[in-house]
Length: 150
Image (cartoon, rainbow, N blue to C red):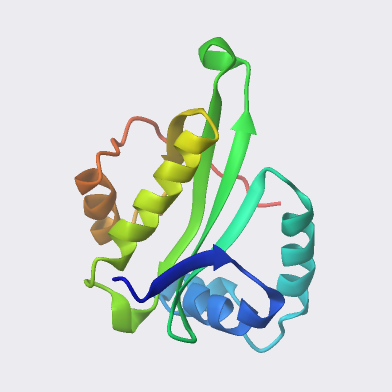
């Protein structure tokens, strides 16, 4: 995987990022690759926040993965900082190549660099393959998550 680069996402990366977000049964119902305007607005907001990172994995000139890492200072756990990993996607052609593991290891190391006490993430209950993947990396399904659409 020496030909792989992980770097901050740019607006030029949005078509590839949104295509990956939409490339599964859940994403296909909630993403709109034909209109990048809301994604452009979101990327601008995210990149202004020093606690947020949207990154891409690039092989050659091709975006093959993406994730968002959020650093959250907190009061609980004796004032610990934690990180949240969201929107992890690996291009369909790259699944099973080890890219997901490398990508998550990068997020964990970034979290350590930020002195986070823990890394957390959520995964839709229907994504059983993803659950096995995260468990292999040492994550435990320790909490039950709730969402309220607004």
